[in-house]
Image 1 (cartoon, helix red, strand yellow):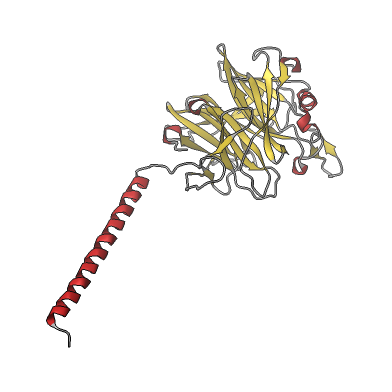
Image 2 (tube, one colour; image 1 turned 135 degrees about the vertical axis):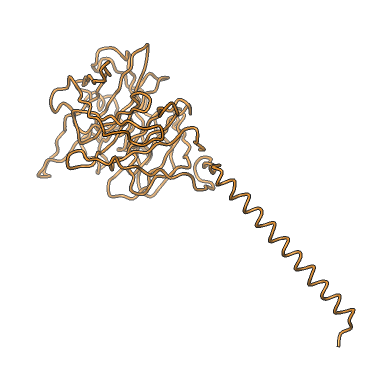
Length: 362
């Protein structure tokens, strides 16, 4: 039988161990509570610091449906630009004679039905498959530019190829909110001739790596329109093709253009090829935001958002933003909603979403 002194010693040791364990558990609980509180207070997780490296989960952009149809189809909202505070214009690649106005309430909700804005001055069927838009302002003048995909398509019987009406529109917003448009004659031929890097793809359909433009941005430093290429790729990376405008308000002919050297964007390698689906300059970020997505239909590759400072070497940084699985963010622009700076995404599946710039934690 153990002495009472030994029992007291053992009991004291067990008590000290229990006190230590309780204290450690309380410390861990307190630390977890503080971390959770910081997360709930809205502190967004850090972005990836370039290619590779540890990543934590950032915000997911989920579209809000427009809640209306364009005839029998959803609105295939592609490029988008700001029109005024809380007002935006987007193109539908299935509509070749109008743009559509989206008005928003102060909390970023759709305000009233979409407004069809006909493109005055265009001949019937002058352009097809409008995919990308951007806005440029200079010397008190304001222009919207709209690019078609420039791609070829198969004929209905699938036996041959056809070149749909294509081009580059310069659109003026009139005082009555009407839109006047000019289409540049011969733009596709000029583009292919002066951009040898895409010339070999000009007569292939997009799913075979053929020419397919889906992004357009205005670069004030280069005084150029930047064409974001979905296909073809260069060394499995997406291409930006800058086209300088000699005079923003000059004759709308190819003589007013100058081709600049192409830029290959450096992005993370994935199993499926990915190209540019949207590109736009955001002044408050001093950078272009580039939406990257699968290059060829039928492949599986998630959309991703990259930041590019505009350098000729194409260095990018992937941002810690993801998109809902069924969203196709083919339009991106910056503007204001009730005076509050915001990004607006448009969804080719028939929707939109607002992301407040003052909550941006990339």
